[in-house]
Every structure is written in C-alpha cells, then in structure tokens.
Length: 484
Image 1 (tube, rainbow, N blue to C red):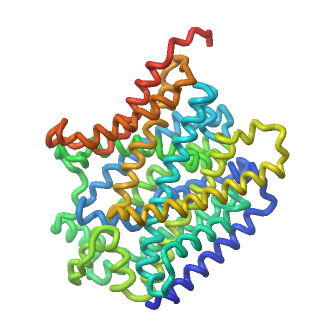
Image 2 (cartoon, rainbow, N blue to C red; image 1 turned 60 degrees about the horizontal axis):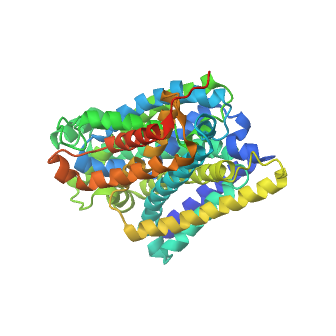
Image 3 (cartoon, rainbow, N blue to C red; image 1 turned 90 degrees about the vertical axis):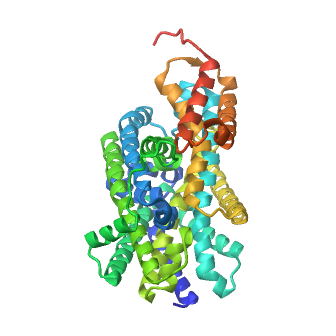
C-alpha cells in the first residue's frame, strides 16, 4: 500500500482526536487540566488507562519478543495483578484521604519538603525517559515504513507528531485525555483482534490449533524454571508486582487519571479491573506474537524483534491490514505520549514550581505558566527522541524495564519508608540515598557476572534499588518522639 495513502489515514485519525478534544476541553481550567475536576467516570478511566499502560511498545515489542522469550512476559503480567491490588488497597486510600492533586505531596506531609522535591524530580526523570523511549519506537516505525518513502526526515516526523499531541492536550489536559484515551484504546484492541483473526484464517488454524502449533515450535512456554535466568518465574512475578506498584502507583501520570475519579471505591474498582484486563489483553498480544512468528516461518520472511510485526503488516498482508495496523499503532502511541506530557507538566507546575501554594499568582498567570511548561516538555520530548534514535536500542521493552529499575527505585524507597515506618527523616539529606542507590545498582548490574557467576539479576534490580534507598533513609532518620 502506498505511503501517502497510509499517512492520509493517520491525518484523518488525528482530526477525529482533535474533534473529541474540542468538545471535551470546553470551559477547562487548571484543575481540569491537572485532575479533570475529580469528575471522571471510573469505567472510562479504567478502559483508557489500559491503552496508557500498554503503549506502542506492547503492540510491537511484546509480539516481536515471543521468538526469543516465548510467553515468559506473562510471568511479569501475573505480577501486575498483584501490584494493582496493592495500589487499590494500600496507596489509593492514602491519596484520597489526603485529597491530593499531586501524589508526591504525601512525601512532603510525611517526610518533608526536600523528600517531596526529590520524589517529584525522580518522577520527572523516569517518566521523561520512559515516555520518550516509547514514542521513539512508534516514530521509528512510521519513519522507516512510511515517511522515508515520502522523503520526510526523522526530525520532522517527530515534530509533527508532538505538535499533534499538543493541539489536543494544550487546553483540556486530563479532562480531555480520559476521553481520547478511551477512543485510542478501542483502536489498539480492535487492531489486535483483526490482525489475529486474519493470520489464523491465513494459516487455516482455529484458536486452539494455533496454540498447538506454537507449542510444537516452542513459542508458548510461560514459566521459566531456571533459577539462574533473568526470566526465572519467581523473579518475574515479584518484579512485575513491584513494576506496577512503582510505574503505576507511584507515577503521577497514571495516578493523575485515577484520582480524577470522584470516589475512592470507584478508583479501587478501576485498579482491580485494569489488573485482570491487562492479564487478558497481554495474553492476546503474546498469542498474536506466536501467530506472527508462525506466519513469518511459513512465508520464509527474515525479520525479528521489533521489526517483525510492522514488516508483516505493511509488506506481506493485504492493504486493509496495513491500514488497521497503522491506526492501531497510532492508537497505542498517543495515550502514552499525551498522558506523559500532561502529567509531567502537572508535576513540574505543582511540585517543582509550587503553583498551588503560590497565592499571589492569579489564575490567568498560572495558566500561562502551565502552557509554557507544557511546550517546554514537548520540546524536551523532541530532543530525547532524537537521542534515542542515535542510541537505536534493538528492544525497547528491555530498555524500558531497565530504565524503571534505576529511576523508580528511589520512589519505591521513599514511599515505603513513609508508609512502613514512623521514623522522622532528616529531610535536608533526603536526596543523598536516592542519588546513591541507582549508582550502586549500576555497579552491581555491571559486575554481576564476576559476583554471582551464572546467576543473573532481572526485574528484582528495582526492588534492590528501593531497598538500598530505604536503608539509606533509615540511616539519616531518627525515632519519632512526637505523640500521634
């Protein structure tokens, strides 16, 4: 199918998003932008957050990794369910009790101002790196498979996509994103289902026959029982639980949408629903991954990893599948990028600039500052995507999990220390253990072949990072002698 025609469908899709944004963004103010006036319906938030949690990485990298890792990613997803329950019944009651706009205000109230700033700073760092890595993967696919053929340079593709995102999030923020994410999640899941049905029909398989064929090829193994492996099932399940706890429960982007729901019980239903839905949806993505590897093998197509699904959909399948794939890919792209830019803007304005506590700024001035910050983050995303292109990592999902291990560990340590202890932190030094812990983990990760032999640290690096941070905070704290 011609590149210009595919690009036309992308533009049509964007126009629809812009129309939704115009309708939902009417009469928006700063509170609409930050938390949707706490008036979002939990079912819309839950459905839209599926798209945000999955992103283009899940749509491309998870199926592409099946050839190398079989269905081992499902081990992490089982851990996700445990993590979502912990968020629902441990973290959300705290956030709602304190009526937070930014979840990092908890750190200020419990540990102190410097701990609060440190936590917010690590969120800005981790979400910027993670979101731009996700964005890079989708931009790369659009560039290689469509826009290179039209003579459009990579930097221009990135800029146009970011301008698109800005146009529909600039005014409405969370109030708009709750609705656009719902639309985009629908598009992504529809693409998943249609592509799976097409390949099954092409291979003349029923659902169960497809699964049996994957088993014969060694593609459907779920549990890895090798204790030394990075993907040992206990490591993956426990790691998955902590990944969700940190990347969702301690992440302003994800919680910003969740606390836009009016009632705590509805927000908890949202989390539990997402947990089981993610388990089901990722199972379908892994099944699709098995199908595309069977399809590629039958047709002698030499491609692998992140390039496999795009290559098949755009060059070896009918035009209507190419259109569906591109629209589904775009649907996967926008929820992860638009929410990230909005959440980073919110956190920077509220947590680092202190917008809420500054009573001298009028609403009009706050809005202007917020819009400028929004533009600055869009520009930062542009720079970071270009940096990722220069690095050109082969597996974005591995890169994302590695980023999470280093940058969310300090957040895990800070919140765990606040929730699990009653000790008083010497707040002026709060940044120190949060800075040292990732560096120690970097050294540990690099030298693990010399330290542990055949044993390999996997997702538990995040837990180790959090524990080192926790221990460091303990060392700079003292028993709380104040009566509660």
